[in-house]
Length: 379
Ligand code: OSB
Ligand code: MG
Image (cartoon, rainbow, N blue to C red; front, side):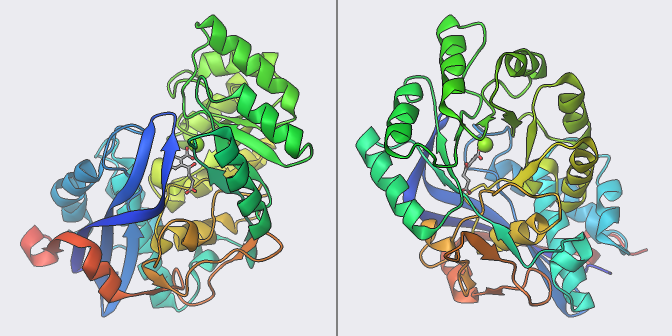
């Protein structure tokens, strides 16, 4: 593939409902979309970085700057035979996983479209549909949360994840268990607890009594040792999200006993290739994985579905219906959850969804086109 053009778009899209986690509340997404063009074909990728650096250090602005200044020139400098080469091409640029992922995933889409096959086929995905769960943010009251869970259960989701933080944890989970004793339930703290705080230790120990599927990222992202200490004291599996940025992180977490489950997000890991590496490593170690979500539009969501169709994604992930996030979504048809709580993997070439140009244009606040000629490559 000789990529001759890379387009960047900065979009702002209101969420259907604001989403609150331990690190803050988001009512609208700021999204960088990447389009790569080669030989009359195109490929699309979406950055998952938020406007503010709370979930990770990256932001939409840093993604834009990294792609503009460092990634696009390297991608445009010479042809790429296979998307797996992108990792090596960008290796000299440290960090910036979300920026790299947006570019790398666009190139995978382009590659699959040129081959005329669904993305899942080139990623190694095998299943036609993936099990779907739902992630529910912190609500104004426990009653409001219970109402929300009732609505999502009606929609068919196979498991419910709620966000927790100190002060919104054991009482909330207790009330959910009172109403639905057998609900497949898990919690995600987004790194809000610390073992050195006695009250936090007591809360995490108390959560062990609620038959949760797992506790996601209870402690700081850089603290594998404390996660291992905590995991030894809990029956409930710990799942790591923010702590796993690379395959080496995943290997270290497993070797230390810091988790028993891994959340895979291609945005956090730098793209599909690194995600497949983590998937394979966890499969070999017998550690279950599931596919996380980052409030993506249908473009990122479609990418996630193709990746989540790989065989070791056995646990329901956070890939829910478009209508929970954006109305309308940037794609047609929207992604829907079936009555059995699965989401079908699109079957067309590439990510297999139709991007609606008018909707993209209406949400676009800024555009930039990078060309191979201007990048000074192709000698
Ligand atoms: O930690 O998994 C997370 C959303 C934004 C940032 C981090 C996370 C989340 C979610 C929502 O849990 C998943 C989704 O529904 O897309
Ligand atoms: Mg998480």
